[in-house]
Image 1 (cartoon, rainbow, N blue to C red):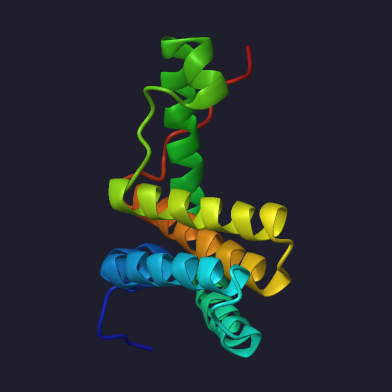
Image 2: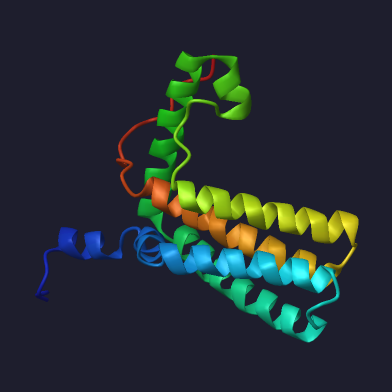
Length: 169
């Protein structure tokens, strides 16, 4: 049975679908994160109806679940993520305790998504801890999860799939 592409080419097309999606959708995901954080704060302050917030949380959670499943079901993504973690572990050992504990000096991925994720996290904490408002907290968490999965997928983009993790000290 002949195929139009060699087997390696087909494997390359299937590999890292989550990374390709995250790279292509980086700016829309950042916009979704900012809009979700704003809507979560507005809902917690009783300016936005609960129905709208719950619907937005469901849409954002579906986007996050889709990206998460694309990453979870891809063995190439797992190998690249293991290589990235092994590389970060080696760098953390070289940099010392602050890199091991807080990640100081290690690459963080996309800066825009980092700051948008921080805003979504703060909106989630404010909605849940200050106002105890579940729809706003659910929306903020869904946005934070979407941004986190996107950041991991973007960081894996350049990681090789052949580095083995060093043995623990």
